[in-house]
Length: 333
Image (cartoon, rainbow, N blue to C red; front, top):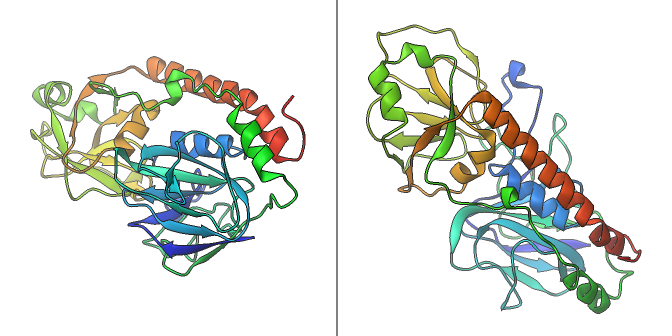
């Protein structure tokens, strides 16, 4: 019950929702950059929402399946195919022993998430299977995939009639609630941060009106933005404090940085705002060179959007009960 890595792709790492509760020890949270797509892939593959998935960045891997499996791919559209035949995102897919999964040209987004029914055998580190490459721990030996790696499946589909399973899965109607899709927005919703008052009024006006470009110097730790400067009223020394996913720090050069999954545990730069959690997947799927704008959002609005998203995930989870039943050897009815 294994998968062999023929080609590793540009940066393919295992991620879950992150290594929570250890920032006070200097351990970054890490986890999936696009948590929405990570959760979607898992639910579609018949898993709980936080089984470790393979986060695939821009150029996907080539994988040889030595055993049958059910997989699902969500997030960026990177032209996946099985044995040369195109396969869709956001559907459970049956794979037979001997099949090869490959990826091709990017159509949209940056990061795709590959889930296997039952997951892959990975030892947790501090309660998480997420990979932190800089620290060299978590995931698969603390690193990205490399050629020749063998991944061990935790659950087999050997007992299934694969053709019948494939037909039954294909006929299950799956509708993704709109809030779970990657809907483009003219501007990302942004909450004012704890230090917004330290910035000039002109800086705040600029933040909500100007256009910023994602710098080439952007990665899983943070997205550096290029655009109009955001000056403080005066030079201020701040005590370091915990950081959050989506916080926007502004260092001395006045150019904002959106903190992402592998962000540092603490930071002393002033935070001018925080991207609403529901819009973080849009940031995670941006390429360097793409443009971002911001619009102001209140805490109450952000919380309401979060609640709507969680309700949509629960709705989808209930809708996918027939998928889980089939994969666990039962009937979809």
